[in-house]
Image (tube, rainbow, N blue to C red; front, side):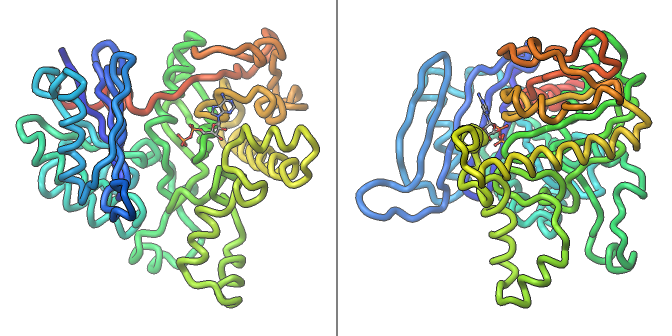
Length: 401
Ligand code: ADP
């Protein structure tokens, strides 16, 4: 058995999956959430949900911190009849959102690496502190196995300076670590590799555009297997319109709002939590917005129009940067499940050699597949992303090397 426990932790939650990295299969998954919340009324604040072998266990209890969170995770495996000690876990893989310019690949965690991840909280205040707390607690809870950090930023570290630099005073940029880092790198990497496998060509021969469109969304331009541009920047706020994030916006809007009485936290909340589909149409779930648009809701229709406009904007930009494309790949919740949106993104692009096949596009499937017509010069694909399995594979590769 070569099982990997994959941890995706935030400041108040621990998502986990147990993955057989050799077979790329999921054995168990779960969520410990509302860590650190105080109980109000009769019911405990924290929640635990564990799924394995088709069975779901759930309970509520107060969970003070990540250490108690990992105690609940351990309890969940024990109560489902498969205590962690019996599962042949060879390593723990931690997803880390921000690795700055420091981490170019998956990295074995020691005290210095953990400390650096905490320091990078300056660039990712919403993510890295939670990762750090979880890493400290997990290393104490599972001290006999190696822990590995897999970063969302690493894959985009190959971007050239022209793509990653903001046009600001370089001293200011240097002092504050301000540059474009990009995120969703684990997904862009694995999805581009799978797309290459589906069309039977080596990834190092291909020019690829990947559209990762879920609740968070980003596009990337991948040249011969290396990221040369991506739509997210210093933070995951830049680029495409998302479930609750605005994506690209004139920075002058921030100044305008600050002068109009908003403070930094207010602007942060507006742009990260109350914008995007949610801000424009009242729900961050594309299914709701689509339904509303279909029955004539003008706000929902405009939200989808903006959403599509942004996607096409990046497809156009990346076609130029790459000098054409061999593949355009759709992935994540919206990209995998919304044929209508895919059709709108690809509409009227036959001049560029981009032609969807309507029947292939409409067919429901969970597998990686081509949805372009036989005559399309660019292969258009849907490739399901699986970041956790990829984290497990990369973790295993590092600890068994
Ligand atoms: P996250 O970024 O949280 O991982 P996901 O990749 O799960 O997000 O994507 C969530 C989005 O995918 C939601 O907007 C949801 O509407 C959309 N989505 C998920 N499943 C479907 C489906 N079966 N049909 C249409 N849209 C879907």
